[in-house]
Length: 109
Image (cartoon, rainbow, N blue to C red; front, side, top):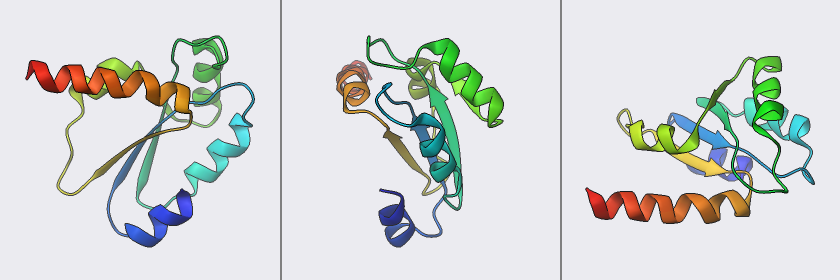
């Protein structure tokens, strides 16, 4: 995904909302995402027994000097600047919670 973003959107600003489950190498993934040009990496946690806990995500955010947010509040308040991209990624389990939330939010607006 990182290579595709570099190729397809090299100069666009990117905000990446990221979390993952415990079977993924969190530290390695954070290092790779941080190397993406023109991007801001934001960590979050989500409710799933396979997911890293909020405390673990918070510790990783502190270690890598990243922002850590509540994903629902972040998505509710996020506004693009110009042609900025929002990329929500890291876990299909996470995306399965985000998608219905966004659809519900869209209907209420």
